[in-house]
Image (cartoon, rainbow, N blue to C red; front, side, top):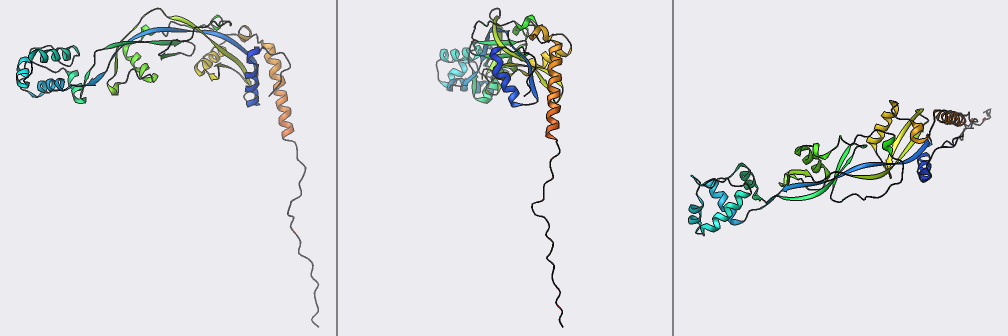
Length: 313
């Protein structure tokens, strides 16, 4: 850890986090640390879902007859064969037509979708709708879905949007296709769109204008002595926001943001701290590579004792 000779612009609430960063890696020094707020966009999305259920006995008989009989029977003919009331058979056929398992023809005809369901021993339930929340994070360039609304709390911090241009229009839910929404939901782990189980999202719509939800984030300006390089790290709580970090560093490299306006860190302060840190680092390296005194071997080679020759005479 390298102490700085100048006062560092570090928010009081982030001092412990700064100490932890520097304690974990002695080659890092935090030049500045500041908290901001930034906005997410939360939208209520209505999803239309279709999923299967097991056939009942009569439904299976009707579909099987439509597939195996040649020509396919009418409702009255099948009722006669089964010995059932025609009204009961027609009511079941009407239900299967509503579910798009049977076509609306005089003869009982199975639709292509009905064939697929029949192979699995299931029939589609009537479509139903649910509401979920879509969270658009333009800084991290992500869209996530969750079943509960985000907490809407007041965050009294500087708005990051005043220092960094964040385009909230590029992640509007209404601009995505059904296939894209299906894929995002499949990846979300919410078990709402599960094609292998026959559970499918067939439609979606955004119910109202998106709501702004403010969240706090932390910005750290970190100097790496080994690389002689300054980087920005963005985190939310203990989570480092990789995409946001990469984006902010890119903007810094392109001179599209200023550390002076962002966290009151001037070029002169950076220069002073950098020079002091590099000097301390060089002194430390010299002390670690100092010449050590020679050490006597623990087991020196012993010379054999001199022996006196004896005259045999």
